[in-house]
Image 1 (spheres, rainbow, N blue to C red):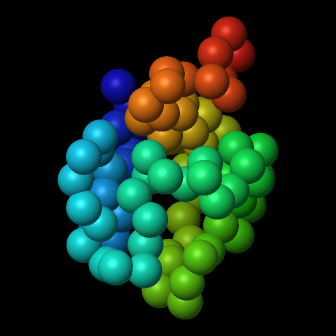
Image 2: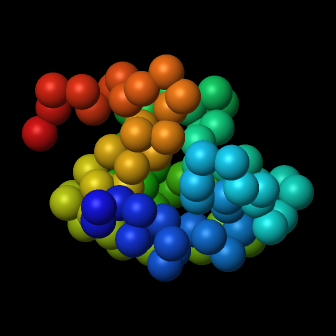
Length: 90
């Protein structure tokens, strides 16, 4: 899955990227919990514009449209109730 590869490359330094791991930085939520604080459309827009930053250390990077979709699909797949937002979307 491309989204998990992006998470492992770009996010794992600060965020937990799996179903049960802990974030290396106490102030960064696990990717699986992002939807508790941010609506998915806000996450999508933030990743598209590079403006999703919950703290000063958050790097900005350009994933492109396909990369954003892949990462958001991966984040959505971590939902314990099952994927919700991207279900049936392309």
